[in-house]
Length: 415
Image (cartoon, rainbow, N blue to C red; front, top):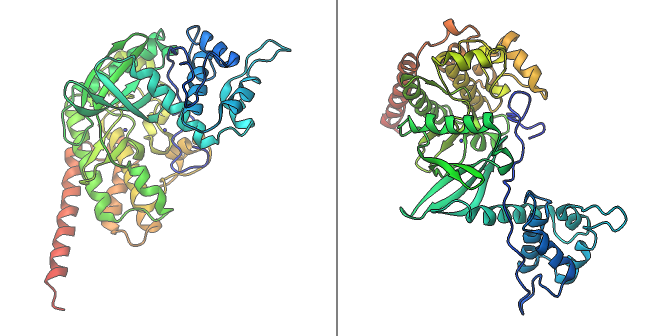
C-alpha cells in the first residue's frame, strides 16, 4: 500500500515516513563451527551472546548485534578476525559505554552500507519468524512511520501473505495500538478486487500484527518516477484510476473514507489490476467523535491532500478522496505532482491557495477533455467536485469507451 527531494515526497510534514525496525529477543550466539562463526572461543563474541537475552533487541542493542555479528561472519562478508577487531571497538573501556555494532562495521569497512542494510533486514526477519505462530516470514518488503511489512507464508493454507507489524516499543502506546486495530477492522469490512484484502489481525507476544493479501507488483509511484516528468500513457493511467475509483466507491458505500489515496498506496499487479492499499488513516465518515478529536490536524500526505484535509476540517467525506485520486491522476499523466516544493508545508498551502495548472498544459499530448476531468476532481471547494465516485465513473467510463472506439477506427483504416 514510505525520501529527500524525491517526487512525490511522501515523507514530510503531516506524513512523516521513517525507517522502522521491530524489536526482537535474540538467542545466544551459536558456537563456532569448523566453517567459521562466532563462538565461545571468542570472548567479545561470547559477551555479546551473554548479553543477548537482556534488555531490548532494537538495532544497536546487545541482542540484535549478537545476531548481526554471527550473520556477517557466517555469510562470509567478513572474517572472524575482522569481526573481532570491530567488536573490540563496541565497548569503550574508557567511558564504559557500548556502541552499536552497525556503524562500527561501516567505519572499519568490514561491510558496505548495502550489505549492512541486508543484514539488518535479515536479522529482523529471523527474530520475528519465531514470534508470530502459523507464519514463516520470508523478507522485509516495506516500512512506514510506525510499522514494518514482511512477506510471509501462511503455513496452514500454504499461501503468500503480507504481515504488517508494530514494533515492540509501541506495544503499550494505546493510541497507536487502537489505530492499528482500527485499520484492520476497516480493511476487514471491505471486500473488493481493487482493494488489498485483510485476512487477520492479532497479537503474538510483544507484537501486534495485521495479515493481508500479498500483492506482487510495482506501486504507481514506482511506475511513474522513472519517467522523469513524462508520466504514463493516458489510457493506462485512466485504467488505473478507474479501478481505484471502483475501490473508493465500495469503501464510501460502506461508510469509510480512505484519506490517504496516493501513488505509493496503489499497487498494480502483473495483470494490470490496481489495488488500493493502506487504510491506516481510514475513518468512518459518521464517526463524529474522532472527527472532533482530529479537527484542526492536517492528516495525510502533503502532495495529495485535499484542501479540507490541510485545514483539518470537521467533515471529511468522499469528495476528499476524489481530490486525492485526482492529484494522483495528475501525477500519472504529467510525471509530477500538481503542486511541488521541497517543503511539505508549502505544498499544503499551495493546495489551499494556488491555481492548478491544467494537466494538458504540462503534457500537451493529453486529451483536453480528460484534463478537464482532473480539474473537476481537484476543485478546491468540495461542492464543485464530483460528489460521488458514481458520478466520476460515468465520465471515466465514457473516456475509456472513446479510447476503445478510436483504437478500433485506427485498426480499420486501410494501409
